[in-house]
Image (cartoon, rainbow, N blue to C red; front, side):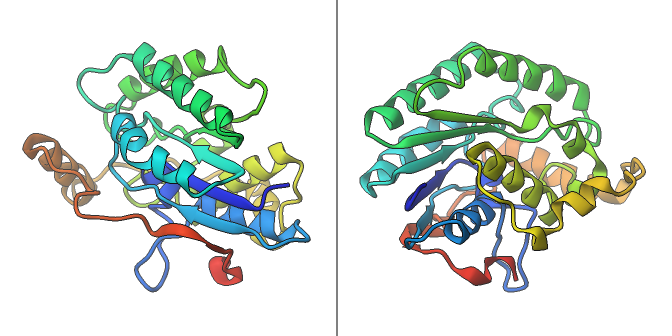
Length: 256
């Protein structure tokens, strides 16, 4: 399987929404690294260069070269989610840039794990607009992948992930249950067993959660700060660096 895994992307790949007691974040990529290590007879190294708030252009400009310099045999990429939330976006351009990044990774000799994010549109303001754009991007990507050297995991099409039980209080980022389900989707695509202690199947089999209301407190705590950053040109990732900048052995306490 894979012994050197590097994740690049935005908040989805960083793990925002799956907060740990020490103030850091975990997320699906950490779970995938753990699953790969559990299924391997050899040590597995893992790095995560993803930074929240990044649009696709900065992800590729700031993270792709750094990822390839680590000599990985697996690179994961999710990007474009922040692009489609801006007032104007060219879906075709986003798909083209993803395609070009995939070509670079495959040409380097690494395997490409390309994956879409989950669909939060049932729960957030202006969800209809996000859903339409997300569907357009998903269709554009599906038309190109998978292909040789690429594994494509279509979380956008995972209807179960739309359930409110999988979302954090901001309703834009997955919580720990959602990140574990995404990791399960990835490991399943690789033919790697999903550790039963993650409880993915049990959660999926439970009754769906009730749709929540967006209260005044929700707008005050989550929506207005996001709007404020857009109006002032700031990002939630300003001043942040990669949480795991170099390859290191997978930490078995990730799931604790």
